[in-house]
Amino acid sequence: MQFIKKTSSSRSIIGIITKLTLVTVVIFVIIFLLNKIDFPAPKKEMEKIISNENFKIVK
Image (cartoon, rainbow, N blue to C red; front, side, top):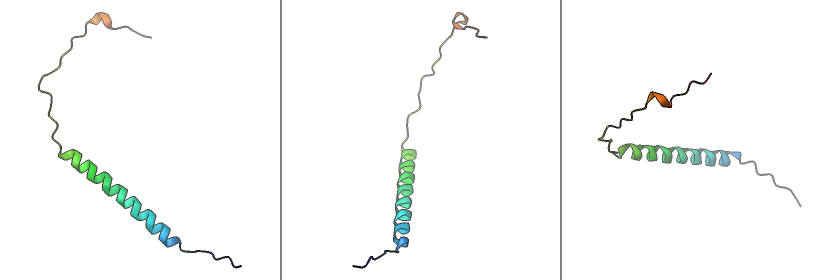
C-alpha cells in the first residue's frame, strides 16, 4: 500500500483568493446600494435648554 501525497496547493490558494474577492465585491455592492437610499433629514430643529443647576464640579 502506497501513500500518495497531494501537492496541489495552488488550488487552495485560488479558492481563497476567489472567496476573498467575492466577499469584498458583496461588501462594496452593499455600501453602494446604501448610499443610493435617500434618507430624509430632520425638518424640526431640536433645542434643549439645560439649566446651570444640573452641572456638578468634579475634582
